[in-house]
Amino acid sequence: MTDERTALIFPGMAPTKTGDVSRFLMINRKARERLATAEDVLGRRLLGPAREDGDVYDEAAQVVFMLTCLSLAEWAEDALGVKPEICAGPSFGQKALTSYTGVLSFEETVRLTAELSRCEVSYFESDYSDVVTHCFVRTPEEGFAEVLAELKDEFHDVSGVIDEGFYLLSVREKDLERVKARVRAIGGYSMHTMRPPVHSTYFGGLRRRAEEEVLSGFTLRDPELPVVADQDGALLDSAAGMRRMLLDTFDRPIDWPSMVATLREQGVTSLCFSGPDNLFHRVDSTVANFEVRTVTPAMALKPRSRA
Image 1 (cartoon, rainbow, N blue to C red):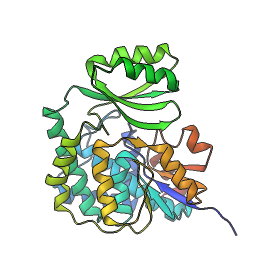
Image 2 (cartoon, rainbow, N blue to C red):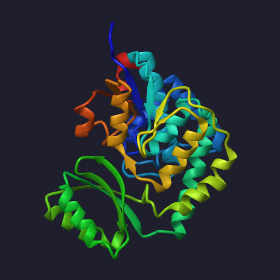
Image 3 (tube, helix red, strand yellow):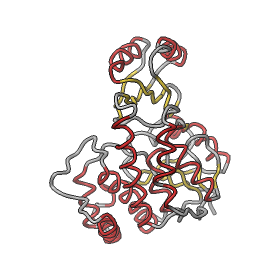
Image 4 (cartoon, one colour):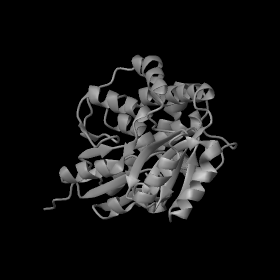
């Protein structure tokens, strides 16, 4: 007998090695079928020689990342015996989560992902086009508060708390180098910059547009597994809760420590991250509280593991 309770985590979108992803989608039968279905839904090819490694977040890349994470979850169930009892999907991970838990069909999730991507592109062409979100790590809390105070007359917003000293901060791009220099001066470190920006209280207009122009066209169902919301760690079991979470992602910050707290309260002892993740599985609050397993295209491509 074992008391292990596993949560499946779909990670936020990160730069990926597209070679591994493409090979996985071509070699794994179920993934290949999902790719073909997605291309039928959108009426276009999603893979091609023009795709390169790096920070590519366009519509096609988003759909490919979503279906890769979803297919890896299926592979983990078949090859590794992963049996999650609860799920979460911080940031972009919400998309694969929505399909995995049956809130939308896979075909509907493909459409949702593509339509939300177009909605965001349109919004940021006219609103907050000069704003970016940057990751800072190992940042002293008191010093970070001082940096924010210095920005009181400039646009700024904390778009996420990932761990102690680990923040997502949205600022105007013209101010970014100055902010990075200040964070370095107090002992913090910079990671990467996200364009367009994410999860800001200033983006209420994007939330309204997404609700009116995109989500209004979908009928969500209750999730088949409990879901932990990435904004506050709330435990969701209804379509209404899932709808709120999908909208909250635009104008509420991520709070991974609250998600960790809820997972612990639910008796979770093991996390399985399904998809390329450069962030959540590595932070101290994750590794200190759970056994952690990451499932990647490279892992699924090993000959002994191919489906």
